[in-house]
Length: 205
Image 1 (cartoon, helix red, strand yellow):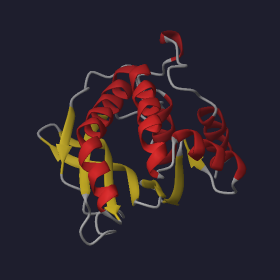
Image 2: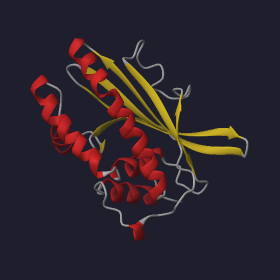
Image 3: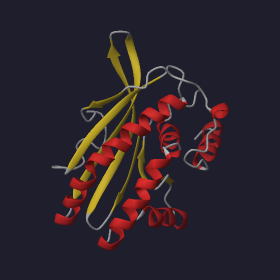
Image 4: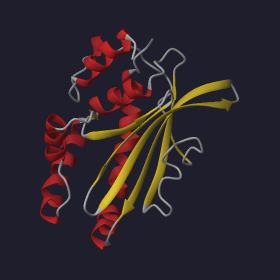
């Protein structure tokens, strides 16, 4: 990794949700619309599971001068979620701990003690020039999150998009019941996080 990118990773990885002030934001963008899209054909998660129990993708347009490093985009996205997302995650932890699912606190502890890098609470599985794959394996389900930078043709020409895709593979009935229960909240959080990052302004080159 080039030195400027390494420095940016170090800086962004230390950011806590909501820690950016208005004066620190890098740039505004007028395109806040979050689109529900098909899983991108070029994403590594699209064919990861034969029959995923949850599979969705959402896209938001990136300004031309936004950075093109998917890891830095992912770190910015997850570091700046709304306060209510953290509250929802805390409630989720209380509810799922008794069923053997990992809590966010456990994942953060594993990240601090383990050798593998993480973005927020998510383990990094693979990186490429255009995509980073995050996720976790648990007793009841496995999931992967893709943060992909994609170029699409629009009526205005070629435009860059950030596509956040999620796929889940459940191992048993408890895992499937959990996914059914949290799916609406998951989609709400994804839409909110993408829209919030766009409003705050993506980091620029």
